[in-house]
Image (tube, rainbow, N blue to C red):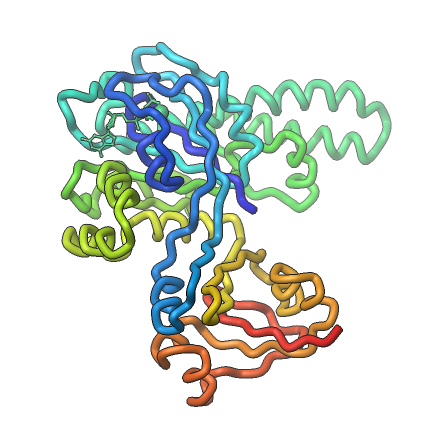
Length: 358
Ligand SMILES: Nc1nc2c(ncn2[C@@H]2O[C@H](COP(=O)(O)OP(=O)(O)OP(=O)(O)O)[C@@H](O)[C@H]2O)c(=O)[nH]1
Ligand SMILES: [Mg+2]
């Protein structure tokens, strides 16, 4: 399962986002540095395809995919107070990061540590992560060079780490470099923050969907490939507390569709190389998680080891086909379900029924 760390400047809505994603009630406050210890929780991955498929199939239960979330105390703000890099080590354990950028204005919630310019915040946060990596790599390079002696492999390792240290020392995140497989293997132990896939959340005022210009501006200062999502954490938290029908009404009433959290979580999934496939039946509609490139038997193994061991074939169709047809059996009856063998590579959104024999 993927672990995702939320970071940002003080009072920008990190814990509000964490609550929206987990349904938990971690304390939030109008004063900066209100989070003093990391919050840990599990986010159910919102996916309205699963809800719609469960509705047509009359599934008794819905089981969602999950992400492990960590909400950290704020990084040092412009006033220089706070925790600084103290908690950055915790981010190294994560597979992906979510950087929260504040644009919402609220007199009751001081922005003296962050400002409301998302571009400035993104640049500041990137620089902090880059400096933290630079520090770790510079120290490791020094030690590696000393230890290498005349050992060719150790010398190559030291050279890789030194190149990364120089790159970082110039203020550039590692994901803006080109690295060989050997380089990346050498970096692995340092778990560099600036190599982690990052999703940037622009936290806008309630009722705003946020001008596209803002997200374009942020996109232009973060490394290519990072995803930028605009949402209001306050609205999303409120929506997350409602039951599904009321939530849909609130979000659709605001023109937000299934809500930006779904978009954000799917972006995280894609960034860390995960995808969802489904099993849909009267008992339950179930979302499962596999790595991109997983074969049908590997996917079957997520459901039960017997299904992988005794895998014969899989019946497969996109979840949209199940929804459109009005259920799995109807999809089959209209010829939309195909048979796939053991080499089939699972696609995002597949509904799968495994034929097996043990
Ligand atoms: N008006 C408005 N207030 C918000 C929004 N998001 C969060 N807040 C408020 O801003 C304050 C700070 O939110 P938190 O979620 O505690 O922010 P944080 O980034 O976790 O703060 P620290 O942990 O102290 O760094 C709280 O009073 C929230 O209710 C928003 O979109 N609009
Ligand atoms: Mg907080």
